[in-house]
Image (cartoon, rainbow, N blue to C red):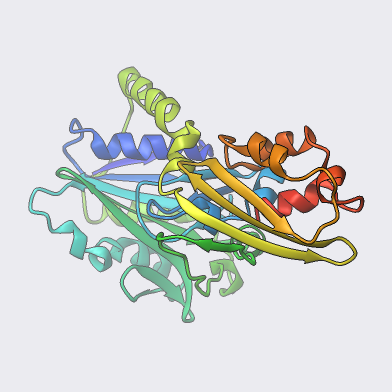
Length: 331
């Protein structure tokens, strides 16, 4: 079995590495990939990023936002969380039913370190009946990936700040995440565990079961990862355009300003049509603003630029500011 452990905390490069290792047929033995992401929201493959994330807050805080190849819900990564990926060739197509088996070394290691972790449900690890690890899988041809997170000392307040928000009325066919009850391992145990120490112990667990050796990437491997990172994971279309077709409706009433209702058609991450309605007291009409928003990327910074180019007070009334309309368009 190969072990590949990285100090890189760039989520886009790490996900490119994971995909490359999964797709590559040159590695004929299983791979354990250990890694971390810093300050990152990771969207499930089948999710609508606009529903799952408070995009304004994430952009304001310079949070990385990226879509992964596996399904499941949206999660937040920081350096209090670790990620592990188990990658191998699955010629018999049996991997899809092996979550509990694949997680045995992880649970064994946690138990040995004084953490009474257990497998739960279909794909979770729990401690004191609270979730400490979620897992997902992806199969590409005969290659199989199962990966998961383990919460040691993550900032769980960020889950609320970026993910659990009072959403606008969005009509979508995409799967919506349901927030799970989660906890950090170090909040539940007497003797705190460093992530580095857990990684060391996990490798020792695998050494008792397999012949373990370090995976060394050659220059051609690194070049392929960099190319994949640039062409896919650094392209906003991968994160935002996939499953991004939805009908958006939002209505607000602001004390002393009036009510505003917006209807928008957003396709592949761009505004194709938008109409404002309401009892606001602007004098200029909304048509010029509506026209200027067409074909604009559905992102906070792009919409804000357009709003700054329009006279918001003339359109909506003296008391309105740009942030009022930005909040209406992006929750």
